[in-house]
Length: 382
Image 1 (cartoon, rainbow, N blue to C red):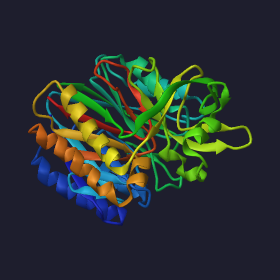
Image 2 (tube, rainbow, N blue to C red):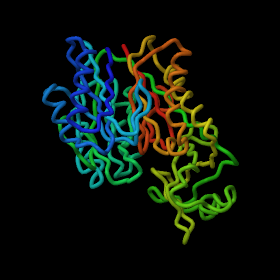
Image 3 (spheres, rainbow, N blue to C red):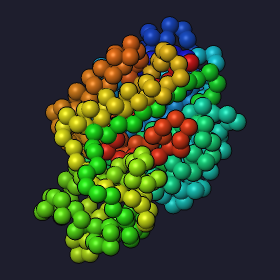
Image 4 (cartoon, one colour):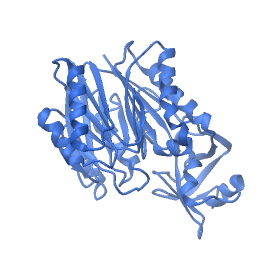
């Protein structure tokens, strides 16, 4: 397997597509791509972009979506288009698509899984943040089996929360679940890192419904926050205070749930994903350098989980909230990722973006989970 990335900051869709095609053609040197992954910011005419790529590669399986900025070997770009192509005689790709995800997530997942082969090595997806993402990831994992990691993120935009779109073939979609199933000669390593660390004693979610945490240890959840943080900042800043959720007890692995808002009338917290009643949680804190250390940890964990020696591509799905907290330091996240790979003597291509949620297993041969405030690194090779 070989991977090639092309990154364009041309502002007009047709010009950007032409640059991507030219750069990719030069890199391919006559090879035929097997699979394509596309990240783009929201400012483009996505239909023109996909039409141009489809005209050049009419039969190429392609999935992707919008992000809150893209990451490549060239660095970070707020507004750009990033194309990744995979090649290799031993690699096969199948595309699945579920529509109207918010109306019936189980049906949409079943539609996407209708294209899965018998032994997929990877399930790659960037889908709409319009439903219970935890449940979607759980259903995808059940459909592909525990040996196949489910990885990716949720489509994003520049904090408008209304302009996210997904790509499948030449279609520009909303409220959808595009999936790429990769089969054949492929090795995968996944890593997760956050930079946020748990503080305080473990607590129990005593009342919760869907993505609302109403009570913690029998008290309004907002009161628990106020015990630690005092006056709660405006609602658009609560993402800096995620909950650490421990699915298997306080001594096990945890994932983060971003706090999006608080209902000050009843003390409930709205979080960016499912938190089950009875879950063990702890509050968290972070500093900017800690977030960047989380990026290094993500790449290091992926390297440790990779069963080969020479990965070709590192897909990076980092949370948009991490970029917001980092501010002007967001561009340095790629440097921490590079540092981790350089320390291991590895130089893969990079492709990724800032998402509204991230997907990966915490450990090899564990089910994938939906994360917030997290950097996910997925390395591929053969």
